[in-house]
Length: 477
Image 1 (cartoon, rainbow, N blue to C red):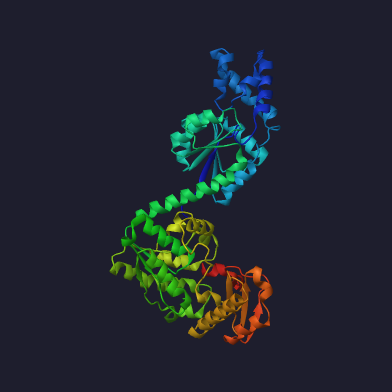
Image 2 (image 1 turned 180 degrees about the vertical axis):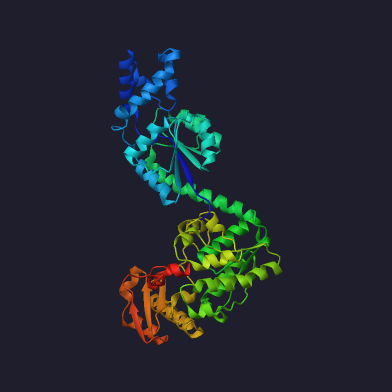
């Protein structure tokens, strides 16, 4: 699944408001010891180790015992009433949305930190306690964190020591000026602003990982279909190693719509890379023609069996495909495994880049493919178990072209569209915004392409809908 986003968080005054509970526990401790602690003042900048906070008020030989007693009193006095701070739940959920991990790195006694996590049901993977200041850096590095979020100047120190991005929030006692002077990278009022910041951080981080990966690949042959993913990979490879070290290989076969060929070549040539157009012969493979659930494995095997020697012959070190992180998470993708078995590399997947991130980065780079609708090969339109033939591929291509033309004449820009071949029947999947255009005229142009009957899917377009018809997809993994 590639590299993983790991975000570190401080606990006190970053995720939870521990001031009331700290004051209550300190007051209880003071009552037992006969010491009138200035608890409000002592809790004004939580973060340092407890013994450091107690030091000015107790004899040196009493501090350790007082600290132990404070920690014993803490669960009853501090855990139940302590709330989360604004935006905490959403911030942790944002990390999960990027399939990341959350590491809690705190100066608090580990057992008490875990009590807060459990009591508030904080979505945290790891709790690392009794870690303070620069020492947090080693813990962050050990877990592979890319950023650390805290409220104290010593949290900034920990982030700097770990070589990660420092994100500071103003929910603790430190001011913006103090945090900036300590060297933080960004200051947020509170965690409500964190999800938006994280989106940008994750995209930049993953693009950095992608560039680093590509620079280590040598000369790269990109399996280039002309779609958004492979187009972005091609552009990224050019940026990383230069056009002279990159080639685009677009495999010509009956499964590639003819309308895709010229735009793909024009895009590749605009980047200054060499364009190769080998022919592939999927229809010579019995497993592909039979079109069982593992059809894509035979397709990718054919593709790589053609591109691998082609790359070697022209002096390219690797064959790279545009598989992204969402593809791998989709579950049923036998083609990915087949390509991997033949040595293909997957830089987008390895960097963790999702389809949405590929499109957003493509938009920023000015690539015309950033909003191009998904365009899987024509064989993906044919229901599993229905034999794939050149005639079936051709009628699907003609039917989709006819539907696009009809809707275009009505003034509709068609995004996602599929004509699924179920045997004698075609099932049309349209963007939901144009479902009401599925009238008799539209059905007629599909029938004219060679189908005996036509139905319209009321659910509209959805990628991978043919997999819903598989009785046992696990059999083909």
